[in-house]
Amino acid sequence: MSEELAFDQMADDLFSGLGLDATFIPKIGDRVLLKVHYDQMLDPQPGGYPGQYIGYQKTIEFIFDDIGKMPAGGDVFLIGSNRYIVEKPLEHDGRGRFIKVIVN
Image (cartoon, rainbow, N blue to C red; front, side, top):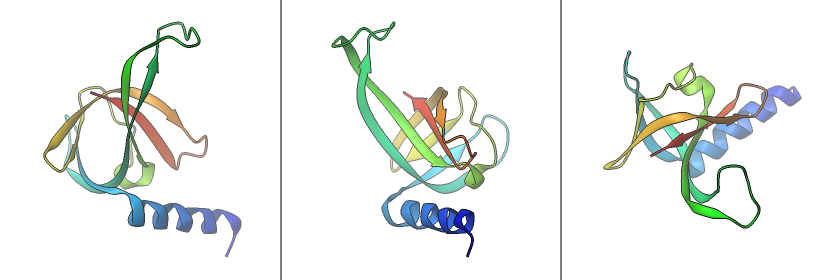
């Protein structure tokens, strides 16, 4: 097994074992069932001043291939009975495998 295939399998195993069941609901298109990682972390003050925090930033990370596109603002993730609206993309792993978006 190549290194890339091994990494893909590890990512699938990680999200399958530790991910939360979710439904992605785009503004246009069909719903998609997938596994996600939800996190809530301290949000630094605009400008990134060290030690200044203004609240919490909620993020959802997922495997790109599960939905096949970058979520747009206004798309929705449902996790259980909680609804999270996508604000904007935050980061990706540079290989197109993992995407993290800011939600509210």
